[in-house]
Length: 317
Image (tube, rainbow, N blue to C red; front, side, top):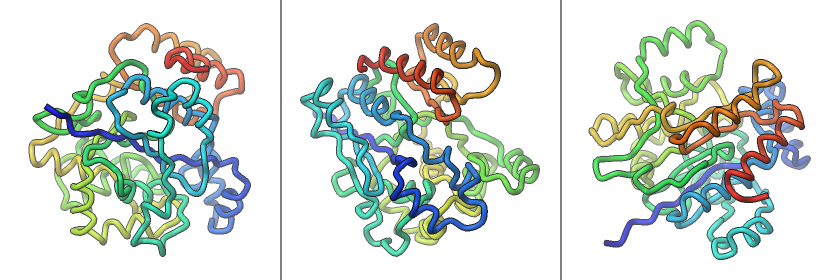
């Protein structure tokens, strides 16, 4: 039996690009450029993680048909790496400009807002019905199968159910915080409420293109809510959350705790943090994903250590 294709996609930005930085400054208001939750340096930093993300997808998920990189007039320069390590897949990695996914919503460009991009990222003409959404700081670290993303009983989601009551308590304690849980809670509220939301982990998100096409037609108010601000705001919601809420309500969600499937790395703690984390990754023989969040917070020596580890794990330099 022929398997339905699966694509992968993720947004990417090189925050060091002076042209993009100038445009960002042109549209920023208040302290947006100094707030890492909104438009600060960390949100747009790139240390070459995109290379390892793409290589890991091609290495450990060879069943993927295409890998789409959504960006704003930029090119991550992956061709030499692809031709060296994956010459037969070089043309399967496709750069998609914001203008493509914003077709019909061009009035909201330019945007520097991941929440805006996420509600339209499905709008790639060539995108397969089944696709896997990632961020460029997520990598595969061992072989995966299509069943890690899609199963006969439903769509796999790496996360947990989180009580809405506790989400509101957390939001009240930090009312100015633009947080991940608050954005997921916001989606639940906009979708009619409920006892819990799906607390998404730092792992790939399998989704269905037709669902988002239908949802965008039914809820243009939600789409435009996320599009209207060029930088993240507290009024916006997590773009993947409405899909998983609906799959859960239909009994079509295969929920797997993300801590069983994915590692999470964010530089903090003592000077041995990086070495200890990498050793713990090597000792584990089960988890298939890793997220290196805010790698720019590491020292050059530490970030070099991480990238060498990734290169060795994936099999590239």
